[in-house]
Figure 1 (spheres, rainbow, N blue to C red):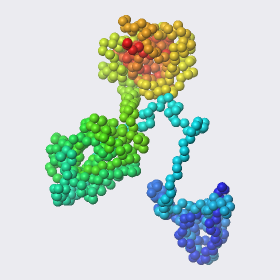
Figure 2: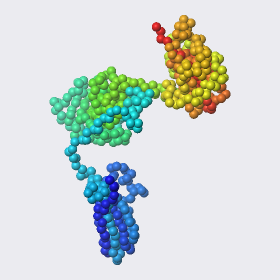
Figure 3: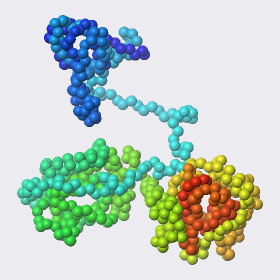
Figure 4: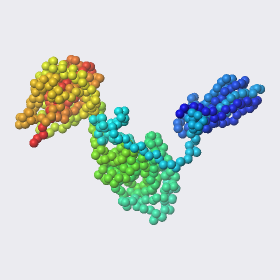
Length: 615
């Protein structure tokens, strides 16, 4: 259908001396137009943004704020022949005509219409104010039936159908616990005053004994009559402002009814996990002797997995419901819960399985806060897989980014011979533990000639032509920049005889009473590795997940700067010699790394030998 503008109204106006038009707006039109035909002085046209500010002030503070870009009104002087177009809903008026001659203008309103002709439809007026909306009782439209058969070429393709790295745990993301509002306890001080406590104490003294209840432990008195107290409402307001300041979504947030709790000094209730996302404790009492700093806090929240937070008189304490905790010490407290369904699953902490004391707080937090929260509670195995991956990633990042020995020896190129015993212990901690009595640990066999210069050049050209950043390295999750080969693929490049020589190199470290060489290895990983400032500049200290490693240098050290192999040998941290075409042999559990390369490109041929399992 052709979209055009229709005239809703059109009229001429002749303003006599001192004539004016009152403040108005056109709520059912899209635009208004005024064209001045004749004028001298006076009768300015003024637009006001008062109504627009009122309507839009809830959307953005910048729109409603007073600043050089925002004005309460704007005046336009009438000029013969000038046409002014403005939004019809904009409040406007015409000031008095202070001249001795009539001001003549033509005005009209525009509405949007879908009509191609008089019988093609009705005007499309502007949306009415939300205040006059009415719900129409009609059924929801039925969902479209699912399509069957092959998808069109440009149709949406699920990621899992294409990516080889997709795992079940990738369906969720776990927010970091540190600093999270549902994990870190928060104290909001001075939320209740001593004067208020005087009023509350008098009211509590009048509560009949039969109105008091006891909790499951029998150590805490409970009273449900504090819902209308000003202290509860103030606490909720303070909590709301605090969460807003932390940019926590309050969409759908809900409270449990408050309960007043009275504790004596001697009781220690059991540790429990909350049933809501946040457990809120507001301490009302202010009486009693000043606390003894050496004796510790008289009233505090203890956590089952360690740690405590003091709850001083008048303070409010927010505790994540996923953490098992208890409140101890003589006190009078208003306790209530808050669910935040926009950031966590409302049903998670109500699960009996997550209330078991054997469940770690971190697991309960992950179950509640795993994103997207609109999905069902993730299965336990998916949660554990995700948590283990995050912990491993954190360790790899520390090793790569903040470890002091990595920075000193691999990034800043310190002399490895200067490593202290403490630094050597830190380097050793980055490797896989060796079995007791393993004679291979720390042994490095250097300078084993194996490839010719021409064969090394062939492998360097092949690596440069095929290397990509697609696959992440298991050491640090960074792109590995390597080209994987098979025995046949390597044989096609350098010949089967050379490959046979390479596969016999580990015999120098193999136990003499082990299986025959042809039966010793169940698998051999072969790959070409490239280091450069633009690709992978260095690799942190680590050990290989294999029995033996053969590392063949494919280019001379003079062709690059940096890129030294550092290994934790029997004599400490050493830099083994490297010569083109020569192999270096070490056990897979040897801790080693490559220092940052500053210039040029370093190429290596690596073989991982995996031992066959014992019969």
